[in-house]
Image (cartoon, rainbow, N blue to C red; front, side, top):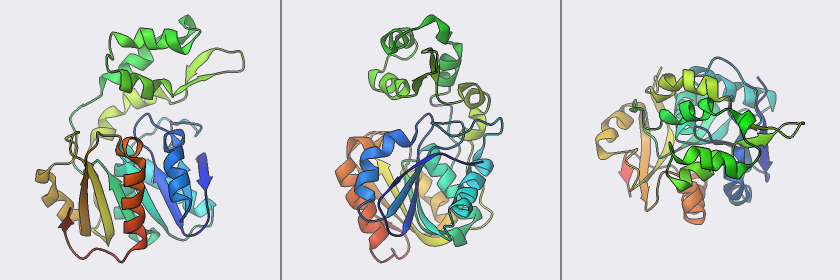
Length: 262
């Protein structure tokens, strides 16, 4: 599979992986920040953004997509950063192919299974008859009853596109995402521990990464630190400058030694 991507800057390779129902478009600001120091590749994962759609959708194939991307672009190894679902893809990739990852950054997600936090969203999106709507505002109005959170709706509406006839469609493969949501909620499956430097950046508001998750993280990642920021789940969008500085300091600095928390 040939994933679509955005490319920023020059230097050592850094691969960035977005979250569920996100895309490379959500990372443009960080692409510019990180691209000043690294050749930053922001991927559209399968069934998202402009990348191809496929029926198989789980962390094993998402990790294989990253491996194939590196092969296609002649990248022998890279730093890898992933947010939420992309963070799990990044962890699965690092645990499966540690020789291909230099340093790992995981943003507001742990390697554990998660309850169905937003499992209703793919159902809502697939239930909409898009032929009935001619504008973004009309779709927003239709989503309001089931998804009252304005910020969430605005995030989802970034996934709208028009085809050649002008009709509105979802860019993500919302049917496959709905049918495979349970697979995306599952834990990362380690084939071995990842021995290289790893940074977990977590939110102090979202509840996605808890102190209770640290023992599991310790089992899978031998050399890690955790940084907690005052933000919601979309840390990179809410605090791009602070987030970018923390990531760059980690990637450009000497590796952490053992467990450390800030």
